[in-house]
Image 1 (cartoon, rainbow, N blue to C red):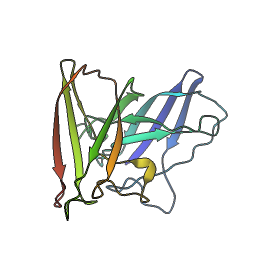
Image 2: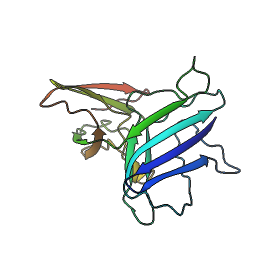
Image 3: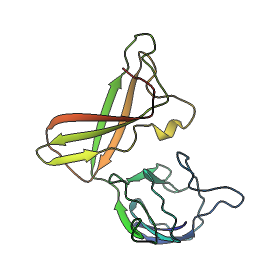
Image 4: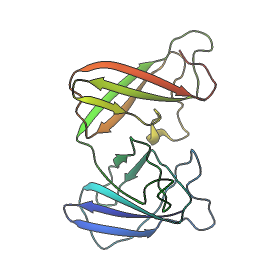
Length: 185
């Protein structure tokens, strides 16, 4: 797949060209890819990312983060609906715009201290529900830690930041869905 981004902010927009790291297999399942884009345009703080794809191999992503020398704090957009990207419209969408969310949810989990309670081999997904709707998270992970910190360590409290453009109001229910084959409590 060939993916192109348009990064938009109050200062304008930057088109990336095809995202590619030569001699590297980009967009591998579970991997975090990093791309460096050079531009003379300072868009200011990121507001939206538009993704366009060519070629008909389907691809899905959880999030995209953007930072710059001038704005070093990463701003995230999330593919909360798990939309597949493909130029073959029977497989997914060839274009999508995602904007930086306006509501930030903080989710804290505490793994019990029981023997074998911890795991780093699951993917936990949450649905936060309230009168204003529901927010589905991607896999709970702290991307800023990359491989340097495991989530869900025995006895540990993990904090996850969920950004959304949906304000659910008062939280009524949390649903946890887990993939992979390890236990966690």
